[in-house]
Each structure stands twice: as C-alpha cells, then as structure tokens.
Length: 425
Image (cartoon, rainbow, N blue to C red; front, side, top):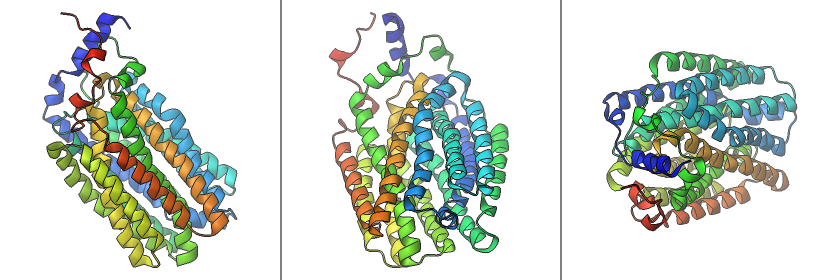
C-alpha cells in the first residue's frame, strides 16, 4: 500500500461514519439475532445426541473427540478467508450460503452409518459455519458504534442463547421418544427456515463510500495497529472455547456413563445454561458499554475457571445445573466484551477479516480440547483431569487480560504515537 493511502485509511478508521449513526442499525442487529436464534436451534438439537449416536455406532471417546475437532479444524482453515470474502462480496451472500451448507450437513448426519461419514459431515458443517459467524459479527460491527457495540453484541449473543435453550431441550426429548436421527432432519428444516428469514429480514449494510474511496489496509497492518490488545484478546477467546470443548466431549461422556444422565436431562442442562447466558449477555453487554470491557473479561474468566472446578465435584443433575449456571455467568461476562473490543480497535473495512481471524483462534481451542478430553476420558474413565486443565487455561486467559492497556478502549489499544506512520499535514 502507498503511504498516502495507508495514512488516509487510518484517518478514516478514526472517524464516526454517517452510516453508523442511522437508527436502523440496532434494528438490523435484532433481525440478525432472531435469525441466529433459529439457526442455533438447529445446532442445539443435536448436542445431547452425539454421545448416544457415537455409542450406537460403536465409537469410543477419542472418535467423539475427532468428530468435534473436525468441525473446528475446518473453521480454523476457512474462518479467515470467508470473513475476508464477506468484506468483498457483502455479509448477506455469505450468511445465506453458509446456512444452506449447514442444512446439507445435517441431512448427511441423519443417514450416516459409519464414523467416516459422520466426520465428513461434521467437517462440512464446520466449513460452512466458518462463513456465518464472522460475517454475522462483522455485520453487527458495521451498523454499530463504540457507544452501543457491547449492547449489540449482547443482543446477538442473546439470539444465540435463545436457540441454545430450545435446541438441546427439544433435541433431548426428540431423541428420547422419536430416535436419534429425527433431530438431524429437523435441524436441516430449521436451518432452511433461517435462510429464508435472513434473505427477507436482514439487509446488507449501507456501503460506507468514504472507506471505499481508499485502498483497504493489509491484514498485517491492521493487526499491527493494536498488536498487544489483539494478542491478549486472542488468549482470552482461546481460553473461553477450550472449556466448551472439554465440556462437550469429556464431561458429557462422564455425565452419561458415570452419573447416568438421560438425554432429556442433558437438554435441560444446556437449556438452563442458555437462559442464564441470554440474560447475562444483555446485562453485561450494556455494562461493558458503560464501564469498559477489560475487567469484565478478567472476572468472567476467573468465574468460568471456578465453575469448572465445581463440575469436578458434581455427582448429580442438581450439581451439574448449579455448576452450569456459574459457568454461563462467566461466559456472558467476557463474551460480548471480547467481541465488542475486537470491533472497537479494528479498521471498519477489515471487520470481516479480523472476525474471521479470531474465529480461527477460537476454533483452534475447540480443535485441541475435544481431542485432549476424549483421550483423557478413554485413559482414566473420568473428566476430572480434563476439567482441571480447562480451569487452568481459563485462569491464564483471565490473567492475560489484566495486562490490557488502560481501560482497554480503542484509543489505549493503539500502538504508541511514535510508532504510527507519519501523517500528511
């Protein structure tokens, strides 16, 4: 990039663009949240089923770990490129294509009879979802400002949690009474409905002509502008998703085999977590706009670590529910704050690409932790060691966030002035 273009793009980044002030911005967030809630019903339907499906096909814990990891690996590889694609062709086309691919993946699941087909379907699911979530987060960043971005990310997480509540509970009951394949078919139908809603209700963000007048900053340069903050936020996001990967594999196997939890009880467990996160995401998202992002990330990580220790000592469904509520409080404290701060310090023209990069970071944790959890469970017959490791990772993520500069605002995250390219007078 020529120096003049680079400097001009930096100046654009520091301006409040007129399109970001439109009152319709939050309306678009609500529409996207509604669509996301329906998509997440499709995701959530199958969550309680995988341990039983794996058992029915004669697979072990490590194979369940590979199944979960294949999803994450596909997202690691494709999240950045597909996030960048949404910067070039628009958010809406990427969202619609991702939803269609997710529906196809669930149809494959419904008729899978061996591990290779299951893993292939899971990888396809990861590939198409790698486009959806960076594009959705980037769309929210497009239509909000630093003054309401935490609130908007909270609303988006709330839509996510609505589906998270309904999906696992419904999936558990369907698997209990209709068999383990029917939820996959219903997930495909729910996804196709979501695709229609996105097409009708979600509008492509208005083009910011002031940005389009200048060349886009290279991703290397975008990251260099807030290198320290991006690094710390990457650690915090990795820690958050690492815990979820452990829970979904090692602990779910532990709950089914050692505690004797039934499918509908797993559904209730995830439903309670979802309700808590739905409320917490709105409350803590707003709080991050008012009081700042940094300490919510730190405290949320420590609360999450404490909840993982609670899971180690859980011996019945009530214990699991209490531990799950504590976990969801910690996640809803740090989740919207991390997402909002990423957008705060990113050049608007690079939202999709950066969201994709952080999606890859998040899913790298989800690729590693299921494999670790599945292997440890096969070796020890317990999730205790896996949960202890996950708690330690969460503490590291929280301690790293302590070193976010100042109040972790967009201004304080920038590189020092003497390292900025010289501006044209």
